[in-house]
Length: 597
Image (cartoon, rainbow, N blue to C red; front, side, top):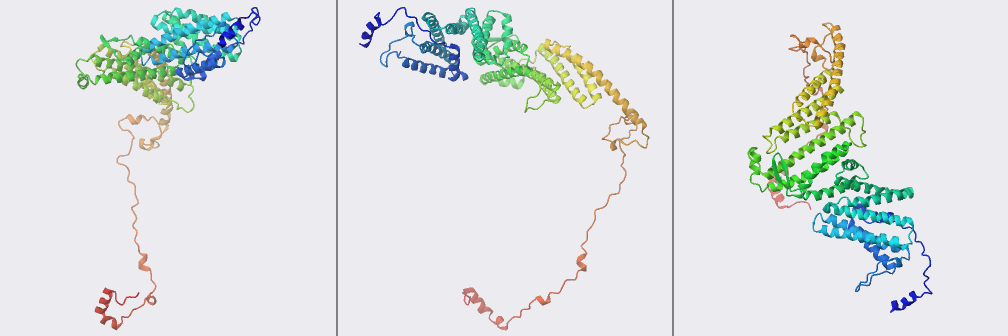
């Protein structure tokens, strides 16, 4: 009844002037408002459910304060924000928070779909609904005529970003990677202009959004076949600001690709892959080599390889659990010969990757340690500086891993693999000899260092007889050039040491020359040591007088006169009656008679 009474009053021409200018609302900083709400309510830790609940509560408060409640508990009457209802800027937050709630719900369902694949359909519906709402929000701001230019530009950029994000998420199934590019380019242009127009404090929010847009644009172009975009995308992965976002983006894309990987072919055998974790690891392993080439920091490479090794460990455990039901697994391990089952060969395939990744990780550690020892990189506070012995130990671990590859089940008779592994073993033995030689150089043992340098060159020549990878061949070329220069330096130092030592020994007369056993702490090159009569030690040794063990005799007691103690001794005389009462005294003592109380 109240609505019927207000309607004619509102329609009266006297109280509602038709040509009155509409007032301009204050500026709504859409991106800043959204970012502050996201960081304060869960998205700092990627908790989309918490943020969705916050959006629902805020919408409820706004509708209650603005008296735009949609019915009561029993009856629902939908009330949307229209042009006629825009009395103040708070009305714009209702459609904005509604869009954010749909988007947050979709991201929540995306995470839950990893456990329940059916939730992907609900996620797509929520994304489409968010895109529908943001188009209506953009039209509302344009038609109302009460928002200033910055608010309209903010809403247009927000709408372009959200529509592009929706198409980006749906492109994994539709494979239409060209559609998000148009919206991302529009959002990139708008936010670039806004960044230039705002203050330095506000520009950080726009800079973060621009970085996110650049990553997604390159990702779309990568799927469209742009090689330059792929290289740029991999180079951006090492950035601290974009590393986590790009890793999450690549991880979600690879999880969808792994769902289609059902079998692999290796060494002429086709193996079925059932577990999703095994598929995901094989997909990541196939792409990591190209990514490692574009990362210059050895620490970043070690971090990536450690993460992938953990995935490999989990995949191996899954296959090992399945092998418990394989009756041929344990007998084949004991005999090390005979046919290998497909599941057992898949275990061999994963073990092969594990050993290879461990070798790559140790090679990256060697690169880091060499730079620290040479002074190119400073050691972090609280960490122990590496030594040459650590480099030798890493090379020994690499050689051990290479030898383990040839002993894997099913690879014992692979001559081509053995030839390749043998060449790599010689290559890393060459590096090991080089580091041992460097440790002798630090101790100024030039002769030993010279011998090890020669051994290094011999290992390099033996390694080149086998078929090697381009990277290993390149490292051997660098090592060979380095050893050639250092070999001559060690040779010259050894000659200088010998020339300074020979005159000193020649000046000594026969009487002054000490035997070797008497000058072990002195280094003098004595040619007589390699002759037929070396002066090493006196055999038998000279007799030396040794004092005997002394004997002690206590003779003082015989010469001591002790004092007389007769005056202090009391002589007791026995009473004659005591002898006659022996029996009576015994009886009295036995029964307690005569005792004193």
